[in-house]
Length: 438
Ligand code: GLU
Image: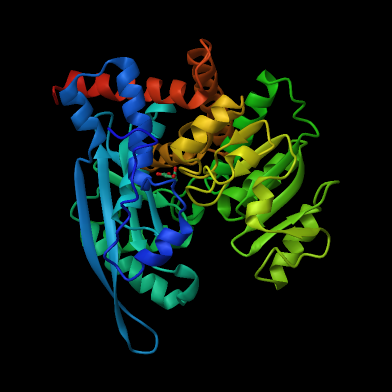
C-alpha cells in the first residue's frame, strides 16, 4: 500500500482525452482509485483485516470496458469508451450511477465503484457497489446523439446488468431522461423492467423525491454536523462548489431550511455575496445565461477563490480532487460536507484533520441519492408507489441514523471519514465472510 507521501503520478491514460482528464483532476500524485483505496487500506489496517479479505475488498469484482460507436448528427462516426465496473456484491446486487464526463476513464470509474460499495454499506441499503461511465463531453452532444449513445451503451453492458444483478442510476452528465432511454433499451430485449435503473422520470416508475434526494441528504448531514459542532444551522453561511443536480438542490433545500448561501459556482466560475445570494434571481438568471459567473447580484470569484471563502460550511459538489495540498492550508471553513465523490485527496485530508477541520465524508454526505434509489427499486419490484412524504421521512431516518453511527464511532477522536470507512469495511467484510468468499 502506498503512503500519502510515496504515491507517484501514474495517471497515464491511453485515450485522446487523458490529457484533459489529468488537468481536471489535480490529485496530489494519486489516481482517483488509489485515493479511494488508500482510505480503505487505512481502515483495513485499523481493523486488522486478513490479507485475503484485503485483496478481495481492494480490487474490483468485474470490469467491463466497451467500445461505444456513436453516429453524430453530421454523419461522422466517433468511437467512445464506456465502462461498467462492479466492485463488490457481498451485501446485494451491484448498484451505482452512470457518469458521462470527459474524465470518466477506467481508473475514475473504478474509484467511484469502490466508493459505492462503502456508501451503500454505510447507509445500510442491501446493495453492493458499481459504477458506469462513458468518456465524453455530454454538453457538446445533441439530444439525438445522447439518446443513440445511451441506447448503444446500454446494449453493450446489458450482459452484466439486471434488476437483481446490477442497477444503474444517474450521476454527473446523466439524468432521468437518460435513465428512461436505458430502461427502454433494456426492456426491448428483456421485457418491461422498470427496476433495471433508478432515477427514472416519475411517469415511468421513478420515485417522487429522487431528483432532489442527494441534495436533501447533504443538507440533513450539514444540519446534523452543525448541531454537534455548536454552529447555528439557521443562518449558517454556506458555500457550494458545483451547481449541477446536487449543488442546485443543496442550495435550494438548504435555503429553505434557513441557511444563508453566500457563494456558488459552476465550471465557468462562481459568485459571492456576503449578505447571501438571491437564489430565485440566480435561477432566473440561469434561464437566459449558460454561466453563473455573469450574475449581476454578486461579486464574481474563480472556483479556486470560492473554496477559500470565509464561511461556516463548505460543500464541494463537483469533481474529485478539488481540495488538495495546493489549497488545504487556505481553506477557512471549519466544516466541509463532501457532496461530490472524492473531492478531498488523502494528503489534503490529513492536513485538514491536523488543523481540526470537520469533514463529513462523501460516503455519508452524498448517500441520499442511492438511498432513494433503493426506495425506487423496492417500489418497482412491489409495483406499489409511495408518496413523497414517506420517501422524505424514510430518507431523513436513514441519513440521521447513519450520521449518528458515524459520530458514535468517531467519539474516540478519529476523523468522521475514518469512522465511516471502519463501519462500512466491517459490514462488507462480515457479509463476504458469511457468504464464504474468502
Ligand atoms: N450516482 C449517485 C451516487 O454517486 C447515485 C447512485 C445510485 O442511485 O445508484 O451516489
